[in-house]
Image (cartoon, rainbow, N blue to C red; front, top):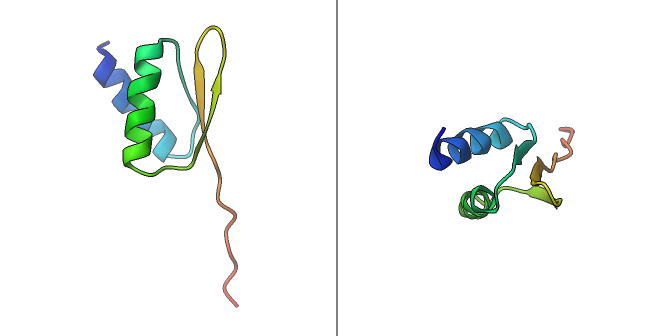
Length: 64
């Protein structure tokens, strides 16, 4: 699988509210760039073997 395809799939996963994991630094850097461009609220957890990108859930506000 190409790096661009992997990043596109991981980005869609994050947008859908699911965490994404990438092993390579290059893929992590590409994903960070896309996340920043889309202004997504994501927590990044870097480890020695890869990076987790975890979407930050927004608390829903009730309508009064």
